[in-house]
Picture 1: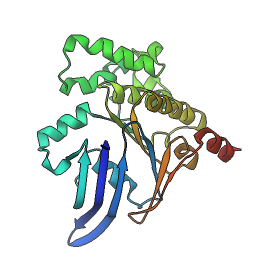
Picture 2 (picture 1 turned 180 degrees about the horizontal axis):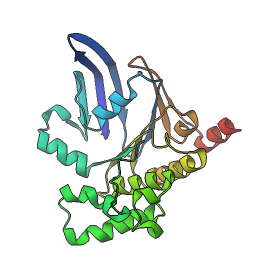
Picture 3 (picture 1 turned 90 degrees about the vertical axis):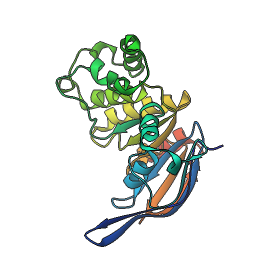
Picture 4 (picture 1 turned 60 degrees about the vertical axis):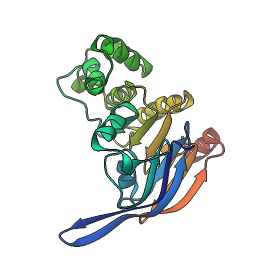
Length: 238
């Protein structure tokens, strides 16, 4: 059974009577442990797709199955629980709280979890250690580099040990060295068993994935496996 499966999913937005279709009959499946990159130019529908897959928006037509269950059968409370406990989000803009320490930022998702409060500190420290920032535990976001802030965001996404991680342009605001450091961490998370769905417009970032879907005008233009990720990446950057 696939972790995620969408069948003929379409999304149409209506604004002042004008309808705009962002996705058209999109179908694919994602297995547990996969690493999928979704690419496409601005307006291709990749952010809309991420929002639907991440339970942040609802599709207009078609069907979305998560762990074999049709998502339309979940109520709002159940969807909120899935967002908090089953998935982790990494955003381009980090979305960290200012004037709040690294440790406290990472602990945030636990506020809405069933994890006993007495375990929060140890879990947060474990997540921060996983991204190599134990020496920055008490720093605030303004005292960190862009790459370090994104690593804090990754630690926060890991705190509830999610089945799947959604990364929306995670290297978009970073220089190439910091960006590759972030991608190396995401790669290690995938190697450890986390399913990753990455949204990016950067080919060298997408080549870290096992599979690349390219969107064009809301439809899938191609869906290909990356047969040798490291070799493909090194060939591209030369």
